[in-house]
Image (cartoon, rainbow, N blue to C red; front, side, top):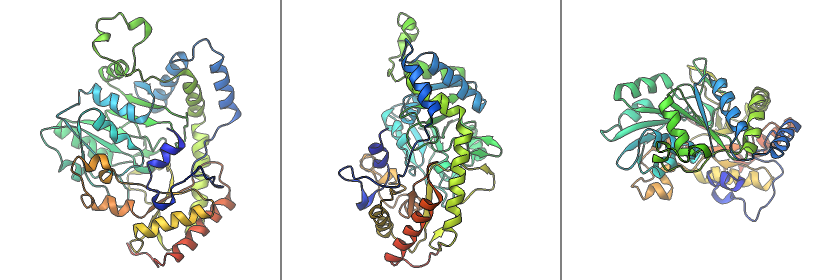
Length: 401
């Protein structure tokens, strides 16, 4: 996923970057050290650059990190979800319940599989799919639920697990935004029948592109690998060749970068938590926003981005004006994010603005601010001060929730 593609997933309003205009404070900046550079250099000097021993090692260490039996490296979270849906035999005529609120358009994989995405609304505070609202959408065509840990905040997984068992549905965990977060003490990625991760920018583990699917079901793992790609020694296998692969594997160069970043993950997350605490220090005096919410069963949240939620006296247009003012001051920011159900593809499926009021209320007033390990306290102070000045300029006044 390129930086341009990344920004396309956000609601940039009138502030969309044009002509490659540079910004002084970037929304995202990967945490790459000499260790990663050395690992990639060594991988490029190896006799095999395509999916090979490093990709397999990355899979093994990622599975061990989560305590899952199997991990399958994939080119992206979107393709990881597509392979997962195919592994469960989900396709045309089936329905999959999902959230319309996310920057990562992983949900597009549902349409790519031929199934119909069925949206349900989110919780106003956590931003995650609401189990009761998801249950109301279940029909005899429903085959799976895709629930995400939105912006790093875990979904209510105990309720989703009970819901999936009750209706005999596959529970797929979209953990693309939440690596390292914990629900009831357990890491995200351990609650779904399968879980999907993404390693593109601006996630803590950045491989340029890449992802991982984890599961404890050997049949699903085997199917994932068959849909991903066929090994050279398998091409004459009658059994394996029954399915046509997407040829979407991970190169050893990408795996070398991911493996090194995985081993540094706690270090990276700790540095990001320091940035989070600095943001909290300066936004305390900003009366126009609501504080970051952490649910009662959530043990730890590692935010994907630092998202500021404006109060109800702010409109979508005033939010966009704030993003524009930040851009003028060379601060890259974005609306988080354009709800899926108002994007053209889903409009063509019959969805309209007004279908999911909580999602729209949250998305219209959310601003994603720069969030990465290279931010200094002075930069964060400047970002918050600029945003506060911009909020005064739009005349929104104090917030009421």
